[in-house]
Image 1 (cartoon, one colour):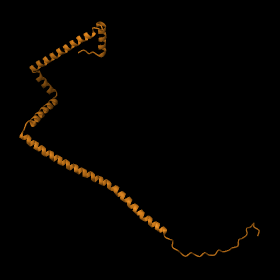
Image 2 (cartoon, one colour; image 1 turned 120 degrees about the horizontal axis):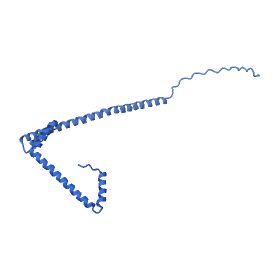
Image 3 (spheres, helix red, strand yellow; image 1 turned 135 degrees about the vertical axis):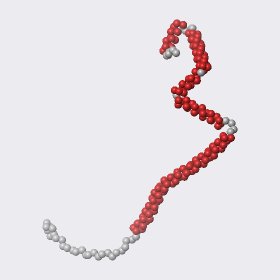
Image 4 (cartoon, one colour; image 1 turned 180 degrees about the vertical axis):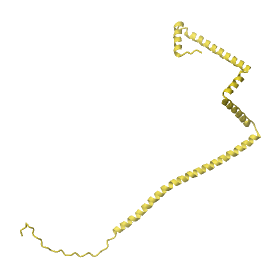
Length: 192
């Protein structure tokens, strides 16, 4: 309809304030609001009457046919929705012997699925525990290797200490040759 922004409305308000005056301005706004409300109501009634006339004339059928022609995927999806809704309504409606069989089959399948899920879960847990054990084995081997190295080092260390504590074997000492006495020569600058 009319494209009025805030600035246009503000200009209209200022002009109305100047022309009408501050005392009569609220009454004038009330009258304008009632007029706009009546105009909107008349427009709604007119559009409703036109839609009713179009429905009576079969325009809605033509419009749906055109819609289906322009959008075949959307119309196909609408048909799929209708068929699934009717199927759901038929399967869920009242006691039905076929439905009872269907429910029994569902229960059996649900039990099979839950059993298989439990089996898979136990297998997975066993595999995780085996992986943890495998991961722990190298650490245990390292710890065992370190412990074995400490034990062997401990065994070797006392043996060395024991060897150090043993007294040395006595061997006959070699006789020293008597020192030869030689006369010392006087140095050249010495006077005897």
